[in-house]
Image 1 (tube, rainbow, N blue to C red):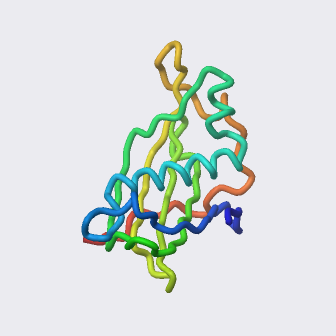
Image 2: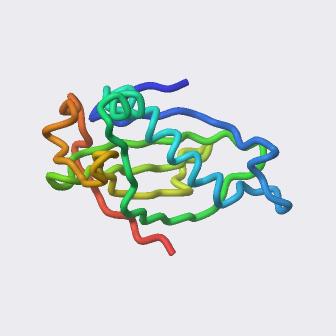
Amino acid sequence: MKHLEAAGTFSTQASVRSYESGPDGLMKPETVLHWLQEIAEAHASTLGFGYDFVMSRGLAWVEVRLDMAIRRRPAWKETVELRTCTAQASPLQARRNLEVRDAEGNGIIEASCLWAVIDIRRRRPVPLNKTLPTPEAPCDEIVPLSGWT
């Protein structure tokens, strides 16, 4: 189930599949990155500026920075909630915050990343306000990572 919540937070639930788990029974690190990319695309599409929107205009989203803290990786068959919100960080970059919560609501993974839109032909960034619709409900507040170690 995917839905848009108050203050522009998008969430969905997912369960870790066998092929997403390593020999230790925990989610593979690359799967964490895949899941974060998938929820980012789903949310962007819901807001009207996902893959289909940018590609139809000769543009592409490019992730330019990722900061992530992992308290623990979810285990095989574990169901977790993925949450994300986005807001403009600068004229050329959007910030996206992401969080994975376990069944008890504990944050187990959090990430903050910066994305830019580039003109595919020119290979140059383009200003966000000239190419994308303004989200109706961006994050109320973009907060830094909590400092997990």
